[in-house]
Image 1 (cartoon, rainbow, N blue to C red):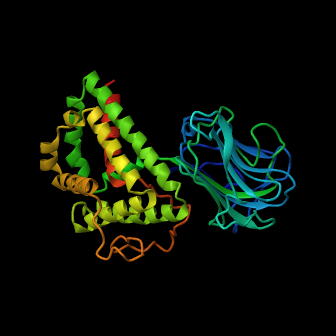
Image 2 (cartoon, helix red, strand yellow):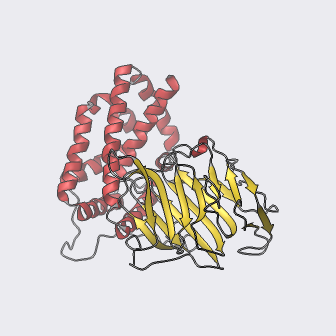
Image 3 (cartoon, rainbow, N blue to C red):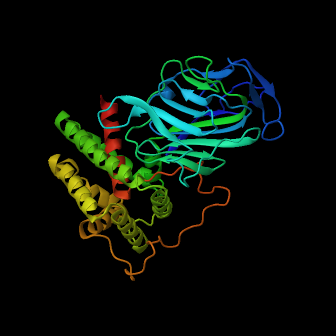
Length: 420
């Protein structure tokens, strides 16, 4: 879901060199260097002047971040005023309130059609998941994390513990304005300068390539699908078909966004349950096991979970909405590649048939439907010990069928882009 776009460590005598290969190097002002921070020779910058800052200039990579993740190691030495951690001008802000409460905000509408306003979450009630105020401690190295999923949630972590969350957002993170990204400082003036030391900072943004990488992780898939996409580009080359495909893509995308927003509004337990199923789904998909009993059982568990979370009425409305998209833009006439798919990728055709059967007929019920426990995916692989289920391992949460449609339609759009 994310790609790294900035990584500063300050090991090179305090130089703000970006090692993410995106050349988001920083310009330092009134910051001094110390060799030892979270460990020996990790490199630290000291913010002890009102004008102390690191500024990263605006460039195309900061356009339309959509989802955003920030991870920092900081040593806070004083409160008494707002202390900025990092802020993108007129885009996002990550800071510590005068009382030590951690805040994460972004500039966007709070209601449909509303004007952009700064809002988000903090580590105090009512955003604190345990109903307790959490603060960034003084005089100790602390890891702080900001995570906006680009759809409906913004979560904050202190030392990998979830301390604040808002699951009712409607907007993504907007583009950073012309003055760029400011570390330890406010873009406007010196009023909110950080007090203390910063050891390391990483920033990620949404990576639109992730669904395609996952789609093509099956063996031999790329070689198989290339001629199909070539033929799609040729068959859909006229303007009317192009408009119909784009209309279908937007229609399905609207339905997908609404589904994801509704799911994530169910809160952290729901998101963790979906993550668990997603992990198993990727395992089956990348191993090529996409149309057998394991996948059927998993997809049934997925659909049951969706109905448990959102209710059968919503799921029926979603099915009808997707069908209306297909009928309105005459999807059957746009996509006539079944023969090529049967020859090239029969497992994919079987997968689509399997999913269609489950969606139209409803998910299969477990053997003991009266048992209270939630459906579990079969043979779940344990989480790797060095990659726990924490904010530094973000996972996509698209439903399988929507992901497949999105991939195919987006690849067709790219074909159109090459022709124009």
